[in-house]
Length: 168
Image (cartoon, rainbow, N blue to C red):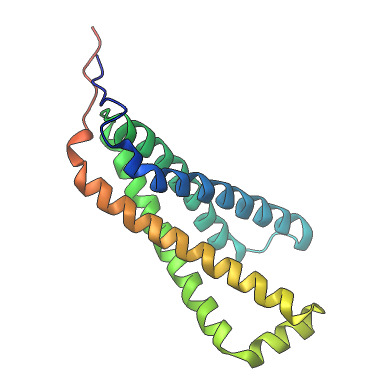
């Protein structure tokens, strides 16, 4: 029988983590669809495989963080160690990819000449390019914050990762 923590025992303090995970899951799904449609629009390019891999890891990470948040943080249940392992591996890839993206976007935002040439090349107003870059920077920082929160909670609740008892 699974032991559950009563709902009034402080599960509300993890609400921000769980809601942020749901929002990031939607964003990761959006990014995945965007990448897949890009393959259809510009053709298959091997250089996009790394981006596709990172986005798929982001999607796996956000889904597993939702499961972790619901089962361990909210309900106090034990889950299999392989979920922790998958969560760790995908969080590392997600952290690396989004940190790199945040760094590149931050440097790009500081370079106004880059913005003007990018907007002129794409034939888009400069304001829209800035909005898109700020949105992507904000999104990547949210991912970085969520991954750091996940690593903290994985350490804090490491005793909740146990193999389920064998059924006889």
